[in-house]
Length: 247
Length: 187
Image (tube, rainbow over all chains, first blue to last red; front, side, top):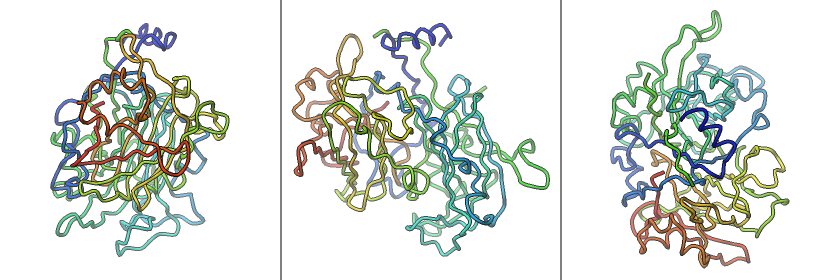
């Protein structure tokens, strides 16, 4: 979409609804993926009904700086002491389908501790809790779409999906973007994890290149000497169609 | 460069840690919001009709005049946020306090009946499910361009019904799979 169209839309928000682009086949998981057992009773069996975007789909909630507290983007300073484990920096850029920065947009993360245990009442994995780690963070992207978190590398953990099932180490990411339809919840993985091939949640994405988009990259530029390894995780939200539809 | 959107993954069973323990929003409309006050209860059921105790519902709606808010949804005391999110309880339910939205403009000079846009997330849900809540008995439903896309015999799954407790209570069942499965939209 040209900048004059964007301007036109901003000055006449009532006139245009510019829809967001649809996903390419294979680049997103299917709902029904029997190897991930919980989908068998929770995936719809009827086909979805195609909904041309209206103002309801192309608008969305806005979160400002009041949503963020000073310690929210450093998960290692939220308690009296420092958490155990390998301190890491996760940094990346959020862009839309045209490569434009998604600025000032809320990102929320949550994760297990270094031993692979969540600070959650329903996690009964026989691994220690860490009194100095909750595993929750949030931040806003900056004007160029960049974000960063300081945390510890989460551990892998067992789950009961199948015999000897283990989740690869991951950090949950939640993003809003500019519209109801740009909402994204996903998981970031770490490079070279031997559990990828055995994980039905990651394997539910048909396209191998699409799966690779969830694997962060070790990044020497983000790595800080004498302090922490850095991982880069860029995120792409849906972009808009180029043709405006007149109301 | 390849800017294919990042794939979705399930929110998992521990979503509360990141998204609802300290970050729930049950009041979509504060005291200052104009309009008819509504307490909307969702109940999420799986393919065997069993309540889903670890789902999350997010809602996004227009105000009583049919306008979507532009201001900060996180600001405390905002009279109308338009946005809410809650985890389901052990009985699969959660309740938002809001106001009945107004009619919203639709495509090509049409008008959309009052509706609330809904996302359903949870363990076993690999990507966001989208649906809409309409209000049973609303006369404008008959002219709604989105309801018109839905086969007539499934439209009732998109209607909230008056709840038993008090005036202003509405109930909406989300049946994820199987008999009377809720209509989900490809947005």
